[in-house]
Amino acid sequence: MRRAAAAALALVTALLLAGCGILPAPDTTSTPDATGVQAALRLFYGQRVVWKDCRGGFRCATAAAPEDWAAPGGARIRLALTMRPASGKRIGTLFTNPGGPGVSGVDFLRGGGASIFDQDLLDHYDLVAWDPRGVGASAPVDCYGTRQLDEFLFSDPDLPEGSAVLRKEVEGDAVAFGRACATRTGSRLAHVGTADTIQDLDMLRAALGERRLDYFGFSYGTYIGALYADRYGSRVGRMVLDGAVDPSISSFQESLANTKAFGSALRAYLAACLRTSGCPFEGDDVDAAVDDVASLLVELRRSPLRATDGREVNGAVLRTAIDASLYDEGQWSTLTTAIGSLVRGRPDEVQQLADAYVERGRNGYAGNLFEAIYAVNCLDKPVTKDPAQLRREGAELDAADPLRAADNTEDLGDPVCANWPVPAQGTVRRITAAGAPPIVVLGTTGDPATPVEWARSVASQLPGGVLLTLRGEGHTAYRNRVACINDRVDRYLVDGVVPTATTCG
Image (tube, rainbow, N blue to C red; front, side, top):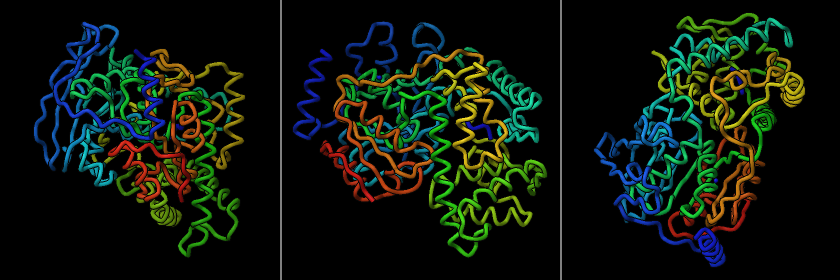
């Protein structure tokens, strides 16, 4: 697979509140609050969101937003929302985003995501998730049909690294993908970046009658939260960022950190695997096992297997299955079984792991995760197009990747974003979040997707940022239900008790 923000008074108030360690109770009003909003935007900020019951005890709604916030009188889009009402004494609305970009918040919450949250939060908050613009049911980005997307995501050309023919093929695929996204999505493609999403979130906050935003973001959802705090610091209530994404580093720096973190997670997995009787790799040498994985990836590139549905299982499919499984230590045994079956000529389990990661079902893709992820990321941060810089970055990525022997495209940088039909709009910079109260940031030492150093960096950028660190493996911390972490988070969100920096586990 292609791997690839009266302010002075508010600041003083926040500092005073941080000093006493208690935050104010969340607002519980339900009437839209468009106070202080410029006239052109009041139509959106002041709209009443009409909730309807939907299955499983959830409520569903849509809200209107301008396609382009800079031209609010133009075309409009609809944003899909869902709510799990508080089951006890309600204190407010807690917005949440599960990450991505490209993951449907509606599907996440209605599909079992509420179970991640401790009962204390479910008792006291209306839990609200939404599909960010460009995602799911909110004016989705559309690029390819199922077969084309299969070919794009799981392309694994057996061509020499650095060769002109490989570069031509990969860049040609990237250009074709971008053009298809532009053709099928139209003008909306220029307005799906995180800058637009945080304005949507501020509008939803007001439309649901909340004076301040209470928010729990995971993974990319932390990027939404951090940029919201940077832009609307005085409107932040209680905010938790779990598995933080660092706004202050470039797209390449993200890729490099991810490569290193996934490499560390791979080694941790293999060390655990070698201690079990069912491990498909022999011996007790982790380095040798890493080499065995790389050899298997190359072998599958040259001689792919066929799953029972006729689809090709090549090195890209296996790499996707491995990366997906490294997100959760609980999936390691499943990965071991799947690789064991694959080396015996039965690749279906590996294909199923890869399919689950990209949201592909038997009849096609359930959502638009990997179309939206490119559309958002390519708008959010610029990438280099300079050949010399690409070579330097490629060499760094190659050196950091324990599976470099199996990757023949690292020196090509990010060809999709380098050839994206819409120019990047975001900037790489440290956030200040002026006027924001203390925000809690969670990091996990063995997180392969959002390395713990990002959480440390984000916490240091936020005024009064509090870092809670979990020693362990896997992506994000709160879902692991470690009392040392969750009790502090719950007291902060429910009672306003700001924790002190702590390491758990």
